[in-house]
Length: 233
Length: 383
Image 1 (cartoon, rainbow over the protein chains, first blue to last red):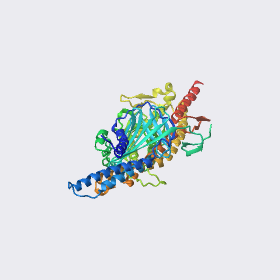
Image 2 (image 1 turned 90 degrees about the vertical axis):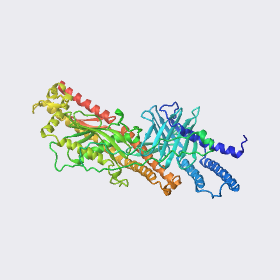
Image 3 (image 1 turned 30 degrees about the horizontal axis):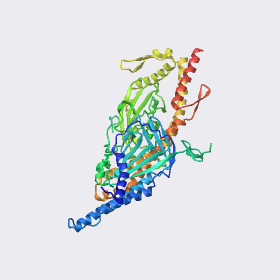
Image 4 (image 1 turned 180 degrees about the vertical axis):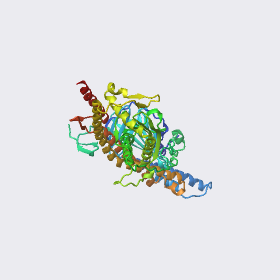
């Protein structure tokens, strides 16, 4: 089968999007994994996806799909097989929806520094200026409350945090360590039950030694959070 | 309402449906029509608050019984946790120290009791002992198993309580915070009071004597064990009392007073923690509530106008921001709970004319205190 450049772009786009779908498929999570994410990580801009580029790409893919659908419709109208209809609101909404998902994913994936504490019992992923992702491997990886359904656990050596919220909003973080342990990929996927696309953004982090010219913060009941500038060794 | 009515009562419907998933091959075949439609909005949560008034004393109760409230247990035992509920939550860690103090405040306010103290360890010599296990807690609903007994071993209360926080105002006043689960504490306090009310004066005096004798037996079993006998149903009875001029017994009473002074300093640490946690807890609860209300609104209003707002930037951002704020407050609570354990100040207290300094966790300090008392007493008896 011949595949044109445009078709290839569409398939590539779908494959990327499906990465997010595939991750959702296995909801059975395990309580043990082999990967050790402990340590301090900072964003590797070179390897990380740029949210704007990714959004533009997915937007183009979606627009192409819509144009194709419209072309088919036009052919059918010309041949008299169906009456002429204006561009539907759903079509416009699907494009807007992609943009919305992209904006939300960018907002969620903003932290540039991660500090991870991991033990056989639990993991705490502290994210700069964001709430921490926590998982207890002993007392159960799933939490269903009135707020929403939160789940976390392992799929092989990938650590997954997933939450479904009102609006059918789904947010998933998938942490994967590179073979040599020098890079940590955090794939954040956001979806909504009313938008037919998922948006996945891959952010890659590299290890760094804290305290060298960085702020060191600690929390105490008396002083709340206090930070000081670390001194080089 | 009848203060001794057994609970539980209201159980909100669990609402989160499992996240259904997609088949990638099928999705490829339909050329990118990806859907996560099954990430549906949760079903309606029916919240029915019930207000419980605190029964307060008009006149001081005589004899006044002291109440010891033990730090609450986390509720991992006997499989009673709610289905799918995650026990390891930042909030739970903070609540085990926070909730007993909230109960203490209510018991003090009721005016039925002598001293009411929060202590880190089980104290079998307490006049009235309150223990509780947190069965479930999510900031909106609280479910506790509470057990109250007196020094004779008689069980006053042994039952589950639950409460919803929504009737205590989410547009709270920072200067005047209201305990979100005040109803549950009122109900527990009322039940304890009703149990006490059912006892005769003789029985109340027996509780005081038994508590003192149990304390004396803990220090010197040989000298005092004969004064208490156990009945068939496991309740202790006072079979006699030491003479009024018994020097050893008087000494034990003095040591007991020192212990009360020590426990009061421990109690202050819980009070400080309670005050610091109150605000973060209130914020966390408010954001939790907003999410619940929002999902309820979406579920109920299946109208095209509301449905058309789904997927909009404003609605998605609002949901996520509310969730984010809720999680940020969870972080604060976790940090506070961790700091409470790590930063317990050394307790400096006076014991028999000597200033002593106790270090470590409250539990460790308490054990150390008990050991010192036994040593002092043994040294005196040996000399």
